[in-house]
Length: 401
Image (cartoon, rainbow, N blue to C red; front, side, top):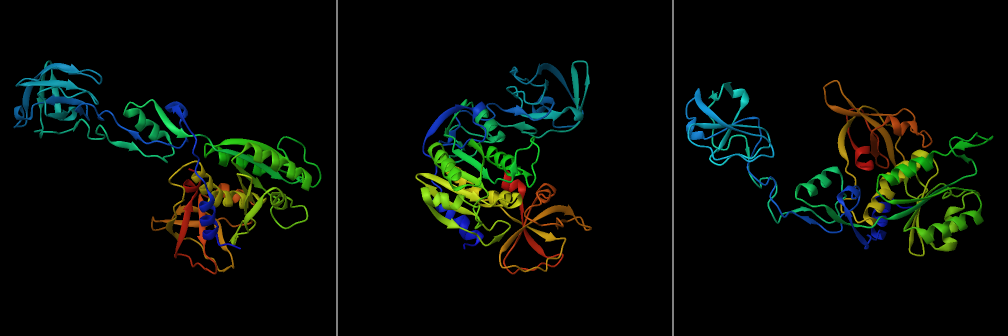
C-alpha cells in the first residue's frame, strides 16, 4: 500500500503528455493547453496614453498653481490629437493617446473649466498619469509559454498582442462509467435497495472543468462479463478511463479483476482516508484510474490524484495543488494509521484572522460535507491537533480550478 505522496509521484511518472496538436481561434481555446508559446509582435500599449480623465499639458507651462491654459482640442479614446503648443491644454479621456508636446496629465478633479480656459490648481510633474508605450509588453516578448492552460485572462492577453489563434494540444479523450446494481439515475423511481447515482454527475463536472473530451458510458451492472465488455469498448475509444466503484475486495467488485484480464494493474490501494481503494493500470495504451464508490472518497481521490495525472496528460505544466498554513478552530484527538483529508471551512476568528472549522460528520458517504466546505485539512498519519495550532489546508479553489 502506497502513501498518498507516493501514489501521486507514481501516477505522475506514468502520465504521458499528449503530442498531437491543433490550431484554434481564441474563441475556442478556453481551457485548452498551449502546445506552442505566444510572442508579442506589437507594444502594449502601442502609444503613450492617459490613465485618467483630465487635461494633457506641458509641465513647464504649469510651474505654479492656478495657471490658466487655453483648451484647444478634445481627445477621446481612439482619437489622435494634434501638437500641443505653449499655453495650451487638451481635454483628454482615459485611454486616449497623449498628444505630441504634452508630457503630463492633470486630473480633472485638480482643475476648473471656464469656457475655453482651464485653471490648473496642482503643479504636475513630467509623466504624471501617463501610461508609456510598451510599459506592459514590448515587441518580441514571450507572453505565454507552452503548457499554459488558457483561462479568460490568457485569452485576453493573447488578444491584446493581436493574436487570433493558438496552437494547442488536442483534447484528451476520457471515458467514464460507474458500477453498481444499486445505482439509479436521477429522475427515475427508486426501487427497493437503490440509491441515486451522484458519482456520474460529479465526475462529469470534474472532467468538464479540465476541458477534456468526455465519453460517458453510464452505469455498468455488477457482473464480470458486462465490466469486461465496457472496458474493452472504453479502451478502444479513449486515452484514459476513469471509473467509480468496483475496485474494492467485495465479491461484486469486478472492475479491478476485469482490468487485469484485459491489461495489467500497477497500483492498488493508498494509505489515506477517505479513499483507500484507488487503482491505476493500463489496457493496451489506455490508462485506467479506478476511484472508490463512496461519493466523498471519489471526489477527494479525483482531486488529489486523478486531476494532476490528467493535467499532465493534457500537456499542462502546472499540475500540483498548493496548500496553505491556517489555524485550527477545532481539536482532533483521533490519530490514525492513514493520512486523512478532512472537509473544512475557512472562517474569521475572534481576532480577525482566518481559521478553519471541520464539518461535524466526516463520513465518506456524506457529500453535504464537501458542499459545505471550501477545502481539505491535511492530517498526517498519527497526527493530533489542538485548537489554535497551524494545519495544512488545501482550498477547493486549488483542486477545482
